[in-house]
Length: 344
Image (cartoon, rainbow, N blue to C red; front, side, top):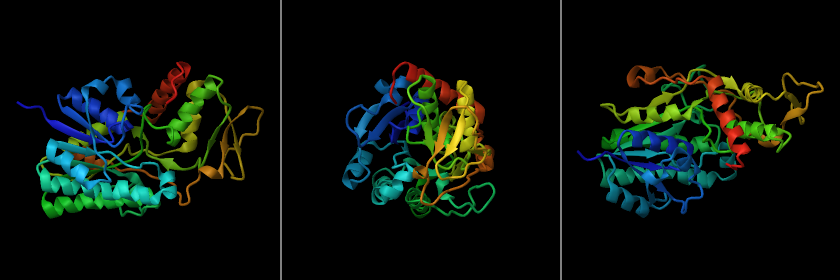
């Protein structure tokens, strides 16, 4: 029996690396589609020990003929679209690029699938940022969307395009509305990894403070390694559907920071720069965290909390790693990396 073939866009990212490892363990042939050349950003795949087991193929979501040729050649059993301009703050500076990749890129792939590989099962990486200015205490699949950034708006286009191609062309298309999911493989542009890497560098005497934005922003944070299983489970169901993937618990950035420093055994004091911060500590402890307006978004998303009931019921999926354990995993990994002189 031939091995199942999976095509993953954005394979060099956090989710791509974890998903590649997950599928390889299940006997899949894994093909990574990427617009980059060389291996300068393959550190996640190398750290997992799977780089040599993946076939890489050039595919640029901004070039329809290229995408069409790849889909026609590979005809994957499963296609996971994880590629995106995924930094919310950057999307305000680069809204057109964000729209091209995160919105039109989804349309490009789905149209190629429709014409050249209609039996392919398609997964679209949607985002909790779709909810934005939240209209429910806990967001589920029926909660109205109110995006608050060019990133979220582009992702909403991709989400509804996935729904439309499922309904209009009877394709097997699913969207996973994933709430924040973190790991030692997160990029340094994300606040969680910025914090854990900063804590590690402070621990090793390489920096003094970490500058952050809105400390009161709340997110539903889970472990990315577990979330890729939910992606796979969506494509194993009889009928395609969309699912919220989350822990069902919400924590603030402040809580994440306090826990990260505590795990590293470092006492902290907080200091604001023109921004009021609850619990400002003016003791003689060394200031380790500063608040800067530079890191606030033009339109803030104050709180996100997912309701994963549908995923539990239909997929049998549930988050297993606690918030405290997730932060510990990330802090300890970064302390080890910084100590070894690793710079990612």
